Image 1 (cartoon, rainbow, N blue to C red):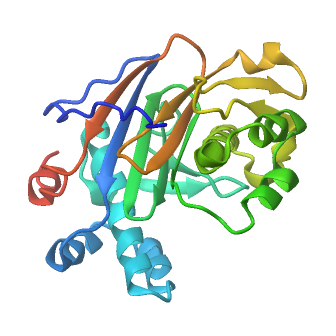
Image 2: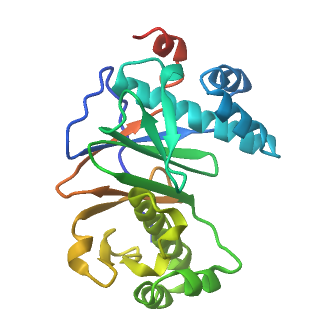
Length: 260
């Protein structure tokens, strides 16, 4: 079964973000070396040190492009230069804005196999996750260990050709939720249920066996390109989502760097 790919648009010059809106950006991390060198200049010293700790060059390049892209995207909403953006990290490692923008502009970043998604919202916690769909040797064992009973039952009923999509549907939806609440893996993965069948919409079904609590969160499937699945979770309901393609002019950083 094919998965419907979201429709991605070129972003407007001026970014306006209202409450109950989510903007999702898709960015290719495979960029020319010249671009990566220039993007490195946008990173903080801490981010450069983190990039240099990667063993493989490809991982280092992808991290650099992802973090620089996050800065460039956030700078559009904050009307500042990317280099001036400051982050702090929660107890469980979730990045948040420090200073200007902190407390009202929420964001989350995920990347997999050369593709990144950035979600941005106003006054609402959110999380996003994306994965490249591929078969895993221990996929059934991982599902049995980490999925809830409801999820594993739904997964086990899928035909063989839908198992990989079902697995990564579940995984990205669970990751998006725990990233939204900011608790990381301290939140037991089996303590909440999500839908996973390719034939069903993305939904947070229950939290601690309570469907009512789950209704306070909005979940949507995100499919940037064929071969990938993702999910976004945001606090609240009646959410309007805009999908922005971030590659055409995002890396025109001289324009961004000179914008105040």
